[in-house]
Image (tube, rainbow, N blue to C red; front, side, top):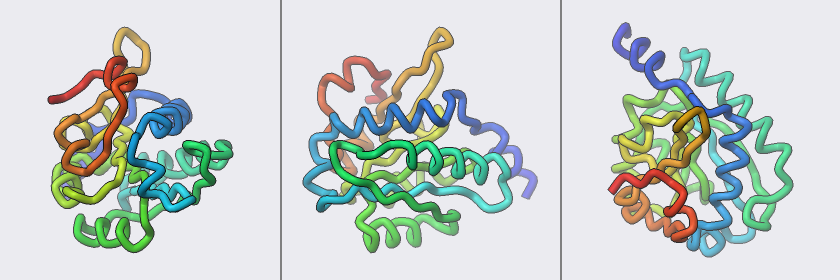
Length: 177
C-alpha cells in the first residue's frame, strides 16, 4: 500500500485542470477521427482512483470545467466518472458507453501503461492530467515548459488507438515518437 501512496504523490497535475479541459476541447477539434467515432455525442469518461484525495478532487474539478463547455468539436457531450478497478473493466466500460475521450486523473500513473496497452485498436482519445501519463502510453498529456502549458502527444499510442491528430497539433506539441 505504501508504494501506491508514493506513486500517487508523484503524479500530480502541473497544468491547472480548468485549462487542461479547455485545451482538450480545442485538441478534439483537430482529432480527425473523433466525429466518425462519436455518433452525434461526445462521451467523456473521467477516471479517478479510490483512496487518493487528489484524484477524486481533480475528477470533480474536471467534470465541473466540462460542464461549462457547451460543445466539443461542435457536438454535445455527456460526461461521467468512474473509479478505476482494473484495465480490462475500464476498457469494457469504454466500449459499452462508446467513450470518445478517456481522461485519466492523478493517482493512476502505475496503471497508465496497462490501460494504454488495453486500448490498442480502440478509437478513444486517452488524456492524462499528469505529464508522466503520456510517457507511459496515454495519447495526450500536459506539461509546463518555461512556466507555460505545453501539450504532449504520444504518437505511437495515438496510432495504436486509431486517433489521428492533425499536423497543426503535432507542430505545437512535444511529440513522443
